[in-house]
Amino acid sequence: MRHLMSPLDFSVEELDKLFMLADDIEHNPAKYAHACAGKKLATCFYEPSTRTRLSFESAMLNLGGNILGFSDAGSSSAAKGESVSDTIRMISCYADICAMRHPKEGAPMVAATKSSIPVINAGDGGHQHPTQTLTDLLTIRAIKGRLNNFTIGLCGDLKFGRTVHSLINALVRYDNINFVFISPDELKIPEYIIEMLREKSIPYREVTALEDVMSELDILYMTRVQRERFFNEEDYVRLKDFYILNKEKMELAKDDMIVLHPLPRVNEISVEVDDDPRAVYFRQVQYGVYVRMALLLTLLEIKVDY
Ligand code: NCD
Figure 1 (tube, rainbow, N blue to C red):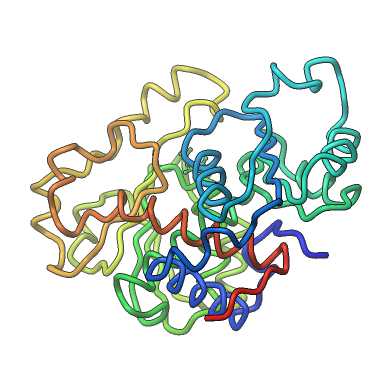
Figure 2 (cartoon, rainbow, N blue to C red):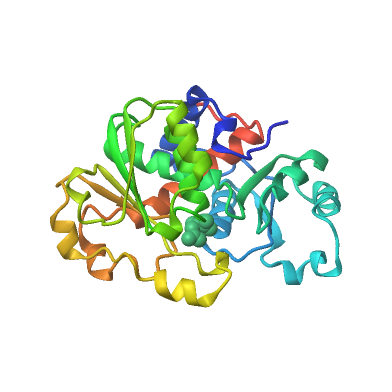
C-alpha cells in the first residue's frame, strides 16, 4: 500500500506515468466515469480549504466513487481530544482512501503509520502540499510542453508557503531549472531549501523587487501572504500588499511567460490580469482535478487501459 506525503514519493518516471494518465482522463473522461464505483474517499480536513477539498471530492465523483468526511476540526472528534492516529484507524473502516489536511507539520505522516488505507497529505502546516505540486507540474507540462529548461520566479510568502516548498522539491529533479525567489526579507525561503539547492549546485537568486526580474521569467508562481501563519497581526498588515501583480508589471514579461497561483488569491494579483492569456491560474484548478483523479486511481491500484 502506498501513501503520498511528499512529491518525492513518486520517481520522475512514475510522475510521468501519472501525468500521462491525467492527460488521458482530460481527453477521454467517459472512459473513467465508473472506474471507482463502490469506492469511498474520506476527506479529513482539520484546516479550512475550499479548493483542495472540493477538488478531491470532484475527482472521486468524476470517477463514479463516493465521498465522506469533515471540513473543520471543530466538527470532528478532534474537538473532543481524539488523536489523529485513532481517527485514521476509524476512517480506515469507513473508506478506501483518505485525503488529510492538518495545521501541524507531519500529522498526515503520523496518520499513515496507523492507517490500513492509503493516506494523501493534502497540506500539512507550512511543510508540504504534494497534490498542489502535482497540479502545478501538470499545468506547466500541459501549457509549456516540458518540465525542464526554464526560469521560474516564486513570489510572495516563501517562508510559510507549503506549495512553494513542495514545488521546489519536485522541480530540482528536472534539468536546467533556474530559481528566482522574490520576497520581502521577513518571508524569505527557508534556509534548509537554500542549502539543498547549494548542495545540488542548482542556480538560484533571492531578490525583493518583482519588476527587476519580470523580463527573465518563463513562469511566475505567485502566492498569498498567509495570515493564519503569522504570530501577530501587525506583521501581516505590513506585508500583505507587498506584491501586487498588475497590467503594468505584466507588460515587462515575455509573451509566453505564464502566471500560476495555487489560490486563494487575495490582493497579490489584480483582477485586471485575469483576462491576460498568460494568466493560467484558473486553468490550473481544472488540471488539479485531472491529476487528483489520476492519483486516486494510482493509489487505489485501479487500472483503466489507455
Ligand atoms: C494553498 C494552501 O492551502 O497551501 N492553497 C491550496 O491548497 N490551493 C495556498 C494558500 O492557502 O495560500
